[in-house]
Amino acid sequence: MEVIQSFTIDHTRLKPGIYVSRDDKNFRTFDLRITEPNREPAVAPAAMHSIEHLMATWFRNSSVKDDVVYVGPMGCLTGMYIVMTGNYDVHAMRKLTIECLQWILTQDKVPATTPETCGNYLLHDLPMCKWECSRYLERLQNDFHCEYNTLQVNLEDGKVFADA
Image (cartoon, rainbow, N blue to C red; front, side, top):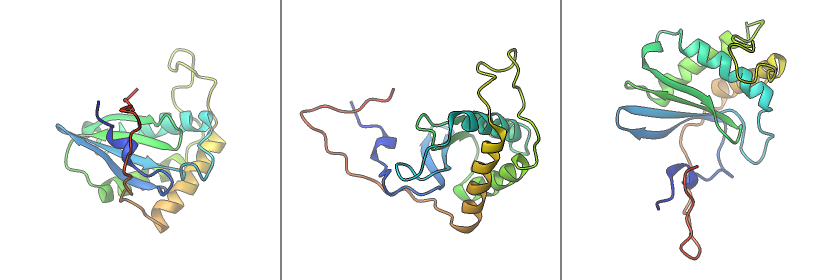
């Protein structure tokens, strides 16, 4: 088995920003890295869940809604993935994400937080969501990172990682 691409990114040098994680077929996956992995705390699960609901709502109602395939959190809780069709680059995604974050900061409730609309409707934290979004917005506006630092993966005894 091949080592998947995300395991070749040096997470010890990865800064908050927006990166192209994958380009395959007609889809581009963006890595919206909110926190600095392994150096800062991950986003709390309730705050990340609220970010997901709000970000998905904004993107699926925005001018690019027809190109949005998926919006969801990373398992490590350090960022979000957005899968798009179309010809978007990190600079276009930066502009869209800044608009989205500014919108999130004006919201007074998280959409779809009832038992009927959410599988874990009690796991939300709007104040912490806004705190994380405010910090991420400041970073995107003032210290933008968009180039991965890659890592040479050395495998032992023929063992490899596999995508979960």
